[in-house]
Length: 219
Image (cartoon, rainbow, N blue to C red):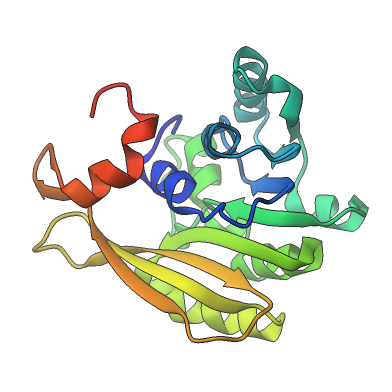
């Protein structure tokens, strides 16, 4: 779970043109998305939140080993307690949340925890993000396409509205698998785009290469 396509997509797709000064990465894993944010922008503060102790330790190690360690900090806590304790809002909140709501196997409890929606339910994620965002802040997430309507409904209850939605396919013949979604407190018609990752196995599309090439050693 150190480097997954979902995390790379989210970190590369998030719009940073509004120059956020503070960023929160919820469910940071080993720090991939936070590091991408640090590489892409000059935000003074990039906080990460990770509940799994092993992932947290790796995240801290990765932050300290990076060129941006002075701007990166990881909290070892659950999102519910974090929301209750934090006073300062963030300009950008970004999350590649656990979303396998179905029953997961017992073969790898750590991986299952990271994937199980129960460890960070969508209502908690959306509601907490709404509380922690600045008035002009934005929330960026990647979710299963089938959850898009559900997430939009939860967000609207918290005063958040979709501004950009990108629907992602693995290949031209595959069904839409993921939705990249950006929310803000401004109610406007969202901009819809689409992305195909591969033309065929191990042959990336030009769109995917253009989006992610800055983050791969070989692309």
